[in-house]
Image (cartoon, rainbow, N blue to C red; front, side, top):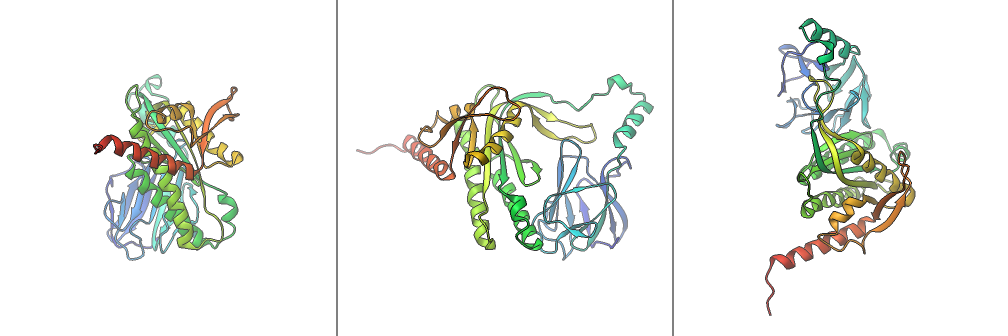
Length: 355
């Protein structure tokens, strides 16, 4: 592996050989970067990245490694100038990493290590340290029953148009979209909980039993901003097709907490509320709609503005649901009108009227 100029790993510690990590060749020898704390790690030249590489071939925000609930790792290039590579092939779309894959950021070579027998090894280690098998949790604690809103946003027709443009442009488009999507979601008070192929999932937390409708507006402002960003990106890159996104939002209770093993925490949400958000996003395609929301989300929104004139009611047959699913759909144009209506109503309550 070729060397890298300087590598600073903010969580750089000695990593047990049985845990996922990157093997990095530096001027001072071989180092290991553990992939065990959190669910994603950023790579780049600017401060704030999980893996900071001060190399002229590295972009400020170069790439991202994401770990899913099922233990799979994805490498996502964030539109870097000099590219990210897996086994010599440039990464243009989120790519699964396998044990012993050669990973290169710019001209910095690394080895991805994810031993396939990791779970069995950890089990044996725990037994060797005196832990009884029955005392070992099947998964780490899902310890909170929380009221949340879940947003799922998907790039439309990604497979089709990925065949229509050159790899460099595809990588630039996907990387830029993912990076800007992360910034928009962060500014709205959440984070990208998961990158799933050409989609992202985010979670907003509410009170124990109540939803502040004004807080819920942040979710829909994020959807609007993501749509505007997507439209702007198409113009900036002069793409030969219409770049669009679909969105699903659902509000309800979910189990949230760390999943996986103790050495591999993943703070996320699971349950019917999350599943329905994915189903709602998928339902927008055959309906030829932009945004679909659950009935509870619609009810909470109706407390701050008149939503009936902007959303159309549907009874959906969603996969995995025996009964019709009550939902409301809207175009992005109507969503923007709704947000303007909300701002007008809010300003009328804030500023005194003069006669």
